[in-house]
Image 1 (spheres, rainbow, N blue to C red):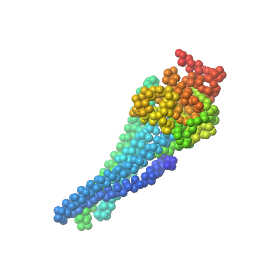
Image 2: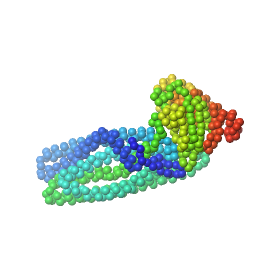
Image 3: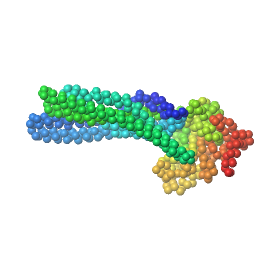
Image 4: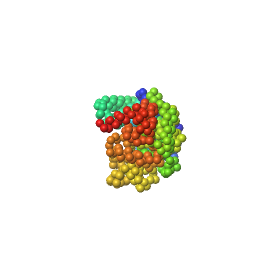
Amino acid sequence: MSAATATPARTAPGATTLPVADPAATRRYAWQVLRAHRGGVAAAAVVLLAGAFAGLVPVWLVGRMVDAVASDAAPSRLWWSAAALVVALVGATALAAVARLLVARTFEHALADLRERTVHAALHAPAAHVDGAGTGDLVARVSGDVDVLRTTVSRVLPAVCGAGATILLTVGGLAGLDWRFAVAVLAAVPLQVWGVRTFGRRAGPVFRAERAAAAERTSRVLEAVAAADTIRALGTAETHVHGVEEVSHRAIDRTVAGMRVSLVLTHRLHAAELVALGAVLVAGYGLVGAGAVTVGAATTAALLVHRLFDPVGILLSQVDDLQRAQAALARVVGVLSVPAPAGADAGGAGAEGAGSPAGHATTVPDDRAAATVDVRGVSFAYDPDRPVLHDVDLRVEAGEVVALVGASGAGKSTLARLVTGTVTPTAGTVLVEGEPAGGPRASAAVAAVTQEVHVFAGTLADDLRLARPDADDARLRAALALVGADWVDDLPEGLRTAVGAGGLPLAPDRAQQVALARLALTDARVVVLDEATAEAGSDAARTLDAAARRVLAGRTALVVVHRLDQAARADRIVLLDAGRVVAAGTHDELLAGCEPYARLWSAWHRGRTS
């Protein structure tokens, strides 16, 4: 699909929302979906038209029965008409059900494809885009907006398509009875057009604001839940509750505004129905009096117009649902428009130990050689007004373990993310074995483990095989043994034990061991550990530290640490302050010749012994 034209909206200094596709880009995407599923769309259209035609037959038969009664026809004629009417009703109902199934199935496939594309785009979007918008906006799009589209596909779209086919054939049927009936029913069109145009002008902005308010509410709630411990510690619970309450009321106001717009449309549609039925009844009275049509034909015309009420009401009243769906689709297509870093499709740097899957052509062989990392004149800023890194130069030799230390906010994690390729430098270059970080070759060589690891739903074996799909049980057990995860034998079903969502919950240290085991299974030549063993002073931390050292053997490593005992064991330490490299060397060299590092070490050591 071509890139959507989308513009991020500023929400606060240093923050942006994810882009929202413009109407033209949204329509282009919808057209591409129709073309990609044209076989299913064509089949659904044929069945819809057949069902709509079958639905006209009972009305026509009622008109014939009226004429038969008026002409004192034989009773058998009425019985045959009644039997045909029942058959037509059953056929119309069956065809309508098949058509609904075809429409839903066709577009559910399209929606599944959209959901996959959206998740793929979200996973490969530059971290600066996601971080600037907040996870709430992304979650609202991938879940809430896609759910709006799912409802539209399963409920609204089949009804709208069926209504459109019924209206088309019904107007044709009126013209077949007498062209003046068709002209009479057109008396309602000005009211309908007026109502829909007014609705169209007002609904788009209202429903977009409603979806944006829902996203903001989701973001605030997620933020409050994720930071619950910090909020309690700071005693700011009431402030956050007030913030959630404020955005919730704003979301309610947007929803009520949308309901008001919808009610105005409904009232105008009812007025149009009254005008249409009145005009056809008047026309029928005149035509029957003039002998131009029979009483049965006038009855058929009146029934056809009355029958139009439901499909016209469905078609026009569902405009608000279609507008909501359009707003949701624009937000989802906006995620697809976020440019992925170069080489993302080839398997970007894996978080939590997930590198390139082994057994594929892009992986590094088992007899891997450690790779070099070059950071040359790199600067970076999530917000142009607040740079995070300034002209950083750093070379990590093959097989070297380099620890990044510094105060919170010094830029350690950002530098680590630049090496993994999840963010792109504002200036300068980051090279892995001479290839740009984030490119296909560099991405295949880099893996990362962070402090906040994720245990994927499924068996423990499935979780581990995300890193190496072809690994047998013996290899999985060897990886677990390497990281000291001897607890696997105590699990109810060993490697077959379900873990993650809906399964056995794993303690944080065990989840870290699983992440390190995934890393051990990869062929990554460069490893980034970002606070991956951060439980200071605990037995678990010592176990994780030892596991990390074993996994890093033979690999180049960049380790972000807060515990300086970890830094002391590294081959080299790089001290950052306010986004700049202020010193580099071994622990002993820095302790003897770098006063800022010596102060950090002294403060950390006193904190441990106090």
